[in-house]
Amino acid sequence: MFAEIAFLLYLGHLLADYPFQTDHQAAHKAGCGRQGWTANVSHAATHVLLCALLLAVGSALLGWRLPLLPAAAAVLWIGATHGFIDRRWPVAAWMRIARQAGWAAHGGAAHVDQTAHVLALTLAALFLAV
Image (cartoon, rainbow, N blue to C red; front, top):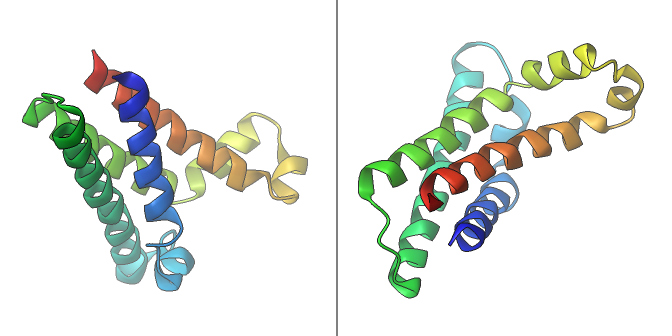
């Protein structure tokens, strides 16, 4: 069941990060003030909604019996971690600590960002599969 849950959560992540993320969210989700936080929270909420929807569809089609509270906790974890990572400073801080300034200057932050998101999704899938 872990593989199926992880796949559906990853699909939800890709959908929320690419076809369902608006230009405004992408441009402002790391910004300060109301505009930045609104873009960040609305983008994170898209992740929560899509991942919850895919878990519900997976449960219905594959006969899973996911308990409601752990499933809700998992998708809230995904939303919270996604919003945190997308503030951009955590990725920049990691890359400074890891001495990856050269890689950061050549597009590496996007890869570190996506890896952090996949780690959070994997932890959620492990939590639900146990």
